Image 1 (cartoon, rainbow, N blue to C red):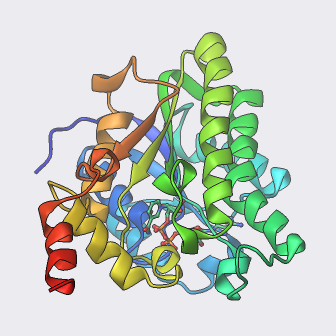
Image 2: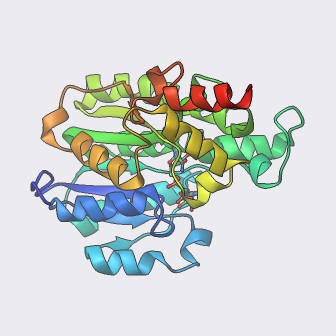
Length: 273
Ligand SMILES: NC(=O)c1ccc[n+]([C@@H]2O[C@H](COP(=O)([O-])OP(=O)(O)OC[C@H]3O[C@@H](n4cnc5c(N)ncnc54)[C@H](O)[C@@H]3O)[C@@H](O)[C@H]2O)c1
């Protein structure tokens, strides 16, 4: 269903890797709502080629950019405004990667070069994206910038590893930069804290299957899917959420406010019989 919520709006969508990606679903929904955009990802991710199908489907162009490179980001922002024919109304940062997680390093035993690289990709890149947009005055008034995050920024999830620290940093950047973007450019900046979702990045976390099932049983509405997240992001890009800024918005079927659910308790009661 389309509500034409983004008719005439232009933007950049980072992080669509394959059809499971949250950014992929978001691009599809933004397109259905009338928005136009440039798709971008790291050159190495683009080599896999799957994003071409998304570009075709949504009538979008693809511009490669490593989100840790200011040079790449400057080129991306300039080119996007040229291709789309003006300043931007929305930007989605949907980027995350921990090399320590990927290589199986325990949180207590990090390779700090990898920790730093992961922080640069997963959190500092958000600062760099906003820095570039701000410097180039690339956002229209009442534009909206969203980054995706996870509740491990507030609570302990042992296997989320150094991504927990990266997400805490990411959420803080949203508030700190969001202040200046609000004051100086009338642009809002928020993070959406999404349920565990079966994607390439998500499934990299150890024990993901158990984890996603547990979250589902804990949440009164069940886990939010990638499509649910895309819909929420569309709402955040639309003119219906103009005064929402500097927020970390939980989008998790209620998980973040539940102490325990009956379903989870039942498993323990049975277990002790
Ligand atoms: N999947 C989950 O369980 C979950 C839950 C909450 C939040 N999130 C967040 O959602 C966002 C999107 O992840 P996803 O789950 O859709 O997984 P995904 O693997 O599909 O997306 C991650 C993207 O980051 C991109 N990326 C990595 N390094 C990059 C770089 N240097 N420059 C530019 N792009 C780079 C990847 O190519 C990929 O497209 C991430 O921030 C993730 O942490 C995911």
